[in-house]
Each structure stands twice: as C-alpha cells, then as structure tokens.
Length: 157
Figure 1 (cartoon, rainbow, N blue to C red):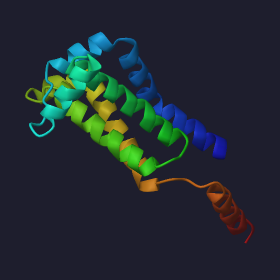
Figure 2 (figure 1 turned 45 degrees about the vertical axis):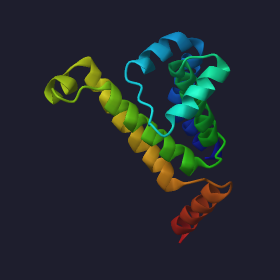
Figure 3 (figure 1 turned 60 degrees about the vertical axis):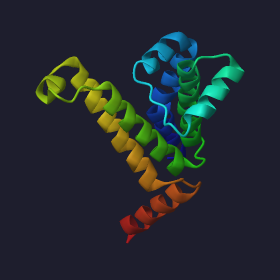
Figure 4 (figure 1 turned 90 degrees about the vertical axis):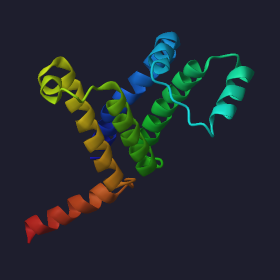
C-alpha cells in the first residue's frame, strides 16, 4: 500500500511538476502571459521593482520564475510527504486563483460546453484532490499496515 500511495501522490502532482518545468523552459512566453494581467500590490511594488532592477529581469519574468519554483517545490513537498498540508492548500489556492484569472465566467453555458469547460472541470477536480490531501495531512509509515491489520482481525472474528 505504501508504494501505491507514493505512486498516487506522484501522479497527482505530476501536472504541477510538468507545468513548472514548462514555465522554466519557455520563460519568455510565460512572462508574456503573466504580463497581460499582472497586478502588484502597492505595498510590495517598490520591493519588486528593486529586485527586478538588481536581477536585470523584467517583473513578469521574475513572477514566472517564482511561479515555476512554487509549483515544482510544493509538488516535491507532496511527493516526499513533507509539509503536505501546507503544500496542498497553497497549490489549491494557486489553482483557484489561476482559474479565476484565465477563465471568462460571463457566459457560463458556453464555458461548460466548449473545450475550455473540460479545463475548468479539471481545475475544479484538482482543487478537490488538493483539499483531500489537506484533510488527510502527512501520512506516516505504518498507518496503512495498522488499518490492514484491523480489517484482517474483523474478517477473522
């Protein structure tokens, strides 16, 4: 069961690993996508500008790098079962925010029937899975064996 649980975690967060790697492989396209709706809170703007100047990169490119790092790092947190509650809730918020940002919700019927409807439902399902991971929390070695033993005793009784 431990191997199955590990494989399930890897497969579940594979979308974040691949998405993060794609962001790194095409930073320019990701930065252009981010640039269209980038909003920096006023209290953070001076710091973002300073980091952008120091690094010599545009703010959208820096945001693209941060997003890629967040996706990859939190996916590894879940895979290796380290701070999985934190990682799952942050990723759920990330998916919810990006869903709100990228989907046009004015024509809801058109949205659900078109090709983007599948993507919307995928995002909703991913948020649900991440919330389940949040509810489960970190899994500890031996918990599955205890459950199997309990079921085994009930079967023999």
